[in-house]
Amino acid sequence: MAKTTTQFYVVKRGDNLTKIARMHHVTLDQILEWNPQIEDPDVIHPGQRIRVAPPPETDGEYEPFPGADFFQASVTSPIIEAMGYRLIEENCSVYTGGPDSTWSSADQKSYAKWQRKLGFGGPDADGIPGRKSWDKLHVPAVYE
Picture 1 (cartoon, rainbow, N blue to C red):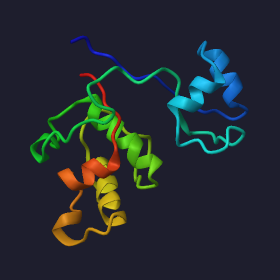
Picture 2: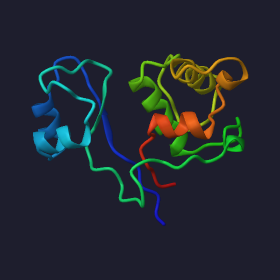
Picture 3: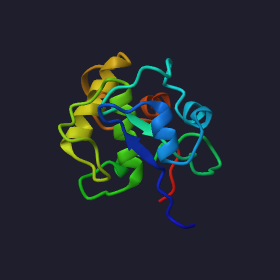
Picture 4: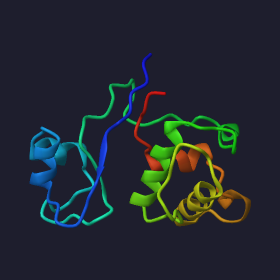
């Protein structure tokens, strides 16, 4: 299967959704469909990440849990970046420059915030994803 990257745009000062849609040759309705987290189309903020292309076709809407062993410093995957952006959307970020595709201490600290937000504590909030917390995060499905 070919590698497909979901396309996103980071909002800049002065942007609006109509302008972003025109730049990417899509409609405002498509932008709203692909970004259900946008409650008011007139309210976006610099630094916000907007999906500007349809999500890749997958068997499911969300990325299945890859297993706890997947989350190591030696792993590089678009799944990790997609997870990072979901953590940002959930206000669980400690990233200074945004997530990337390599597992890092910022990913682990951000994920620990997510686990605590879900009510986990102690060793269950260590920042290493488990199936229960992963399934609740709803990381969009990506191809590698």
